[in-house]
Image (tube, rainbow, N blue to C red; front, side, top):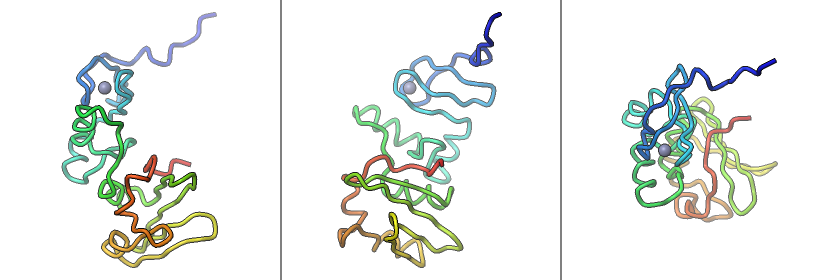
Length: 151
Ligand SMILES: [Zn+2]
């Protein structure tokens, strides 16, 4: 008995970030085997209008810059906040601690375990969110894997 190939519907195309051959499914989605970019059909529009992509978070135009510079794809703090307003539940890692960031009714909650901070507006979160008094926007280089919360 032969197994069904889950990829048989995929069509070859050009990766929107590195320009090499990648495969797209019927919805125009796919992961590039060369650079790791996860393509989605609406990424140009999302990048222009919302400053993000999905599921990668980094807008495609910034991903191209990062690829050209030989850097890994990583959302900036601004991309992250854009993603928060798109998806409502985000996460990142800082010095081994897994943080969540959630938005609800315009308010933003950031924390880990029982420790959290609450902010009333996007501006307040952007300016004041901190880890042990160090502003998140200033220590973003230390933050790893800023992304949507998928589970
Ligand atoms: Zn690629």
